[in-house]
Length: 464
Image (cartoon, rainbow, N blue to C red; front, side, top):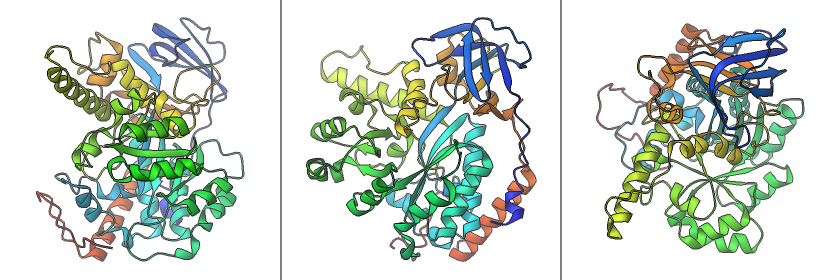
């Protein structure tokens, strides 16, 4: 990757050995720690050491969090990070085919390694700005080894915590010789040292040979799983012992009860997509949170992509709340009681965006809650901002009212990546120039005439 691109992020400042976050309202998402109206959080060498009402600062650097809400960094369990240059290009998409037309079929084959870097970097920075400290990067445009390298290097440069799930492209021509051997090459090149932020996974559909290679390397396997279409495959996979806790299934829409029973029995990890499933009308269009929970699975939440909507978990939580409310009302009316809605309270939705997401990523022992011994991945939300004050309920403020503009501070492993509402160490003019150059290249290569006001994205191609 060129030095010009890799100079977008400036070297991070040294992290002090001890940091004390003082005076925050604490939403720990840890049942033993609980919630504190006013509390302090002590961090040493990137690890949470203590959470108490009052902690002596000693020689610690103090962050005054008076009037702020402290909570774990959020976890986006499924994001196609490489697509960031295509943000909101397709806002009125109605089907999954519409999404594919505006990504895989029109532009994906024209991505250079530099475009993979820019897409992943822009997504990672957008995530951190929105309080997402961990992302499962579903990288299904790894056309060559250089493309894969660029995607990983962008995540490393950004400083986000990530699971990079490398996968073969969906359309066009690519270097098929580097699959599936690309996984071992990446593991040897990037994941042999003391790298605690980025880990490797495989992205593959119901492909036993690729699953076997991932398992040989000890890697999780990420799969786009549409329950109505693919449920018939589950019984055979389960009987052959091919499903397990190393599987991560996205979506899981319209999955029959028998399928959920298999996923639960096998320990498959699940994430659901409130906006994506509805926006693209995937199968029945309803995200599978309620079905998963009914079968004893607590799924993470995921954004999926940004080609049609925003890249933040606040909106995922809100859409999840209201879709749950609508489903509950319909169910209760069908049972003769129109006034008893079934939905998840704000606390549970925040858990889905934090701790449940960490479980989906396999990182629950490191992140997902504010717990002594875990990594200091956390965010501070200014509850005294004009749109949030007064804060009548801390969970309600976060889930139903806050947005990225209210996030004052973001820490990943104790390192500040956002402070006073601004990302740290980002050369914004250079970033925008790189994004503009990448997008112009993709549009020109595809012969796409951009219309800022178009109601629909007219597909350049609709087949591989």
